[in-house]
Amino acid sequence: MASLVGCFAASHAPLVVRDWQLLPQPVKDRFTADYQALGRRCAAVNPDVIIAVTPDHWVNFFINNLPAVCLGLGESHDGPPEPFLKDFPWQQVPGHAGLGRHIAETALDNEFEPSLSYQARLDHGLCIPLWRMELPRLPRIVPMFVNDLEPPMLSVRRCFAWGKLLAKAIASYPENLRVAILATGGLSHSIGEATMGWIDEPFDHETIKLLKQGDEGPLTAFLTPGLDKTGNGTHEVRNWIIAHAAAGNRGFDLIDYVPVPEVYVGCGFASWTVAAEQKQAA
Amino acid sequence: MTDYWLSKLLFDLQSTPALMAEYKKDRKAVMARYTLSAEAQAALLADEVVFIAPRVNPYLLRFYFSATGMKDADLIAKLRTLQEAAPKETPRKEAAHG
Image (cartoon, each protein chain N blue to C red):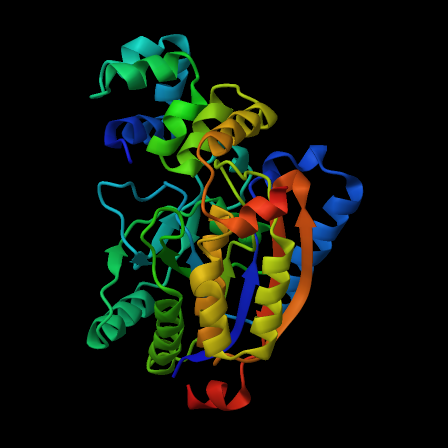
């Protein structure tokens, strides 16, 4: 049976790549250290597959057809179309159609209705962390696109439900697979709106504190109103919540939090230690 | 209020580098392929952030003005005039910016 072996989260500010040469050296050093630390933790659990919980930045979807959640079921996915990611090492990223299909079926059996894509494109939201983590080998990727860009969006409560659903789907997949979850995006940032550039550090610190405490109730109570009152990019914290719930609402360990005005983002890097019984149950 | 066709133009420009290259040479020719209001066309030609911003997704807005050569600092300054004209009911946000 498949097993969930770890959950991870990382920010993905485009300027980390696009303006890399312009960033102060201490900022570059810190990003490098944080992504590499995340990569080491991920490599240590040796995943065969990563379920990537990530936003779509108007690459796959538009407002004529905008899913709240879309699962990537393809045998492979297209690499990033953004010109500043032309050096991304993989033009095609291997998928895991079987696990993707199983997650979709498990979802539909449990009153979730995701959209499906058999040929998804992966944008900077996933590709920057995947690249900068410097994993020794590229696991297969099952993307789970979450609409974090255009309201209305998933409720925080539903994000918790999706995380539990992912854990259930992994645990019931018959193949012997080691599966990790990588949530990308967040923490606070504001893009293309009047508050562009604002990093809401108090919001980020409270979110981190509540993730460490773990409980669903306080996180839901804080984030449900809070996500609408801070920068629009912060909606990507939904992806962290999905990873958190998949990990059983426990085991959160912050690698680093660094607000970086040069890239407009309160950058967070974290992992969740998955409980042994959760691994064994799978 | 979302303007679908204005949004579609920005989306297509982001998705299709060749279209963006054409747009940079001749905005009117590309705009003519979309069902844009006269006000929207004028706003595009004049880089009127304040008109366009409430009608499109902020990420598409940021992409568009970045790709057409506006510096982020200028975009942010223009967006803030929009905020000053119609302050949001978000006390945390306003206080943090104060």
